[in-house]
Length: 172
Image (tube, rainbow, N blue to C red; front, side):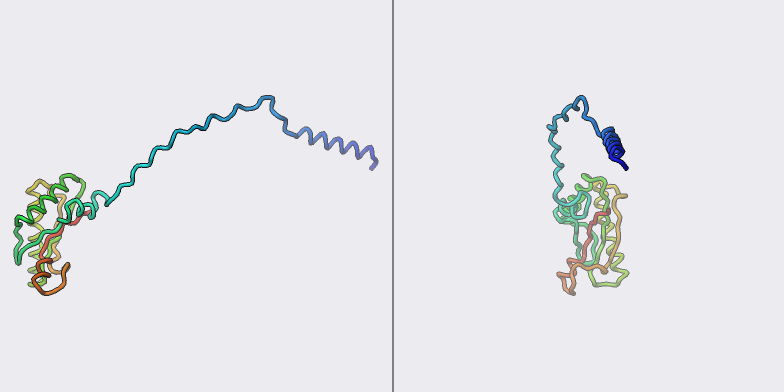
């Protein structure tokens, strides 16, 4: 290949590449808009304490008065039980979306069948009292555990007294 031919090819390649080169615009684009941003809204405060409608919230709101105690072989509501149940009724009135189950319990003395029946009478006595205070009966279920779920182990009056109870538990 002669020098003339090489020069011609070199000039043709240079011209082709020059045709592909990006040309500068005749006018520059406007500057970007000002970036003064509005401050992001403050995050909502994180709620502290237990979730409304939880067992922990219920127990906190009623000051731990979700348990009532009974005398031996009894299921009647005394004045101390009445005050505790009134506190529970106020909570249930404030939070109508909350439903509860009342668990009836007995101490270890007596037969299984007797204690299941006694636990049921205790749970129903608490339920009936709450209903008399205006709580909708459909929001309250009852269950009897008899002597099957003691909170205090022992065969003495102190343990027996702690196990003769009705416990209100939030249903989620």
